Length: 245
Image 1 (cartoon, rainbow, N blue to C red):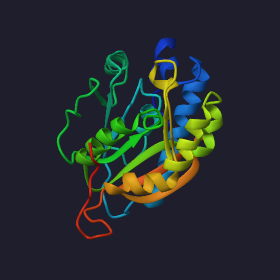
Image 2: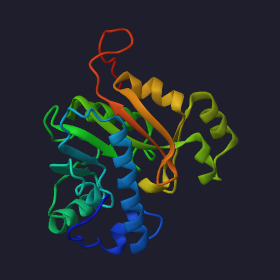
Image 3: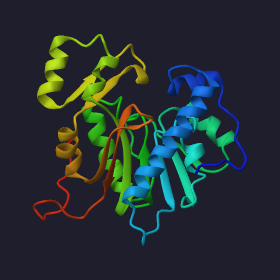
């Protein structure tokens, strides 16, 4: 069970709105707590009971909506949050004492050592990224994750295409054919929508990671949730194939 021993302050409305549908305090807390519980359940379903998983990375942490609850899990010794949102990172540094936070400018690599984390989680990040950006960030996640470490990520399934009633017939056909669709929105990150089918994930993400778990609507009863392991082998026995730039 997730329990905060001392509740940290909530970010201001403008930062809450950047990671949610509204700036509602209740929504911010409810979604963050629910997502953390879903991550915990998925993690515990596949973890190696004999391994240590103390070092966690909140990739795309925003203003700590999920990380503030994850840090309270008994097996988390340290947590680091990274995000391209410099204002959110500054707020986190001032108000969220349990963790370190790093601003990562657009287009740059993660300023973190190789294999420095046991678990990386990304909530509502890859559900908004274009394919080229996804490939670049997946390589970075793979780099900073130790061998045998776990990567937990939420994605929009093709069944959630109803959330974008503005999709054209051509876009629907692209999603059906490729198993992937990036649909730009009105110019901000959260308005962009990315949809993945499970076969696409297994084919593309499987070039770097081994899938351990996939739960349809497994995160907050909306996004799909998958767990991946950084393995040192592939089906061909030649090691991770990698993702082309």
